[in-house]
Image 1 (cartoon, rainbow, N blue to C red):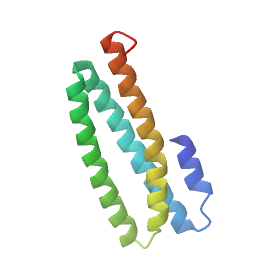
Image 2 (spheres, rainbow, N blue to C red):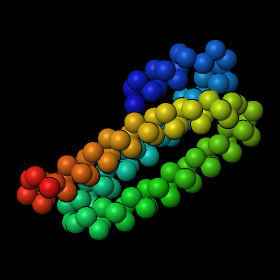
Image 3 (cartoon, rainbow, N blue to C red):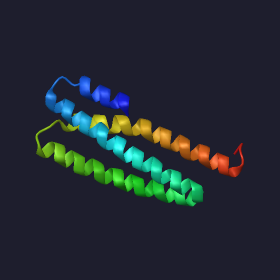
Length: 113
């Protein structure tokens, strides 16, 4: 998340694009933290609970992207920079989340599965 924020703050040339990218990264980071907390709780119960959380978090992120994109466009900021910031961060966080759930389910199953 820190790398994403640093890239968003310094990579775009225009101030509008920079602001949009930072908003996108921040939104992805917040939803990523919420997702990890929810998945951590769900994995303690069982794999079905974790899969339900995946659906809930996907919906939360979809709503977040739509609301964030509308907000950015309404203020005349760069939509492309927002999308790049959000999804650039999202894909990395998604990989971390999937790895976490797989490791937790492997531990719950007893090791090598």
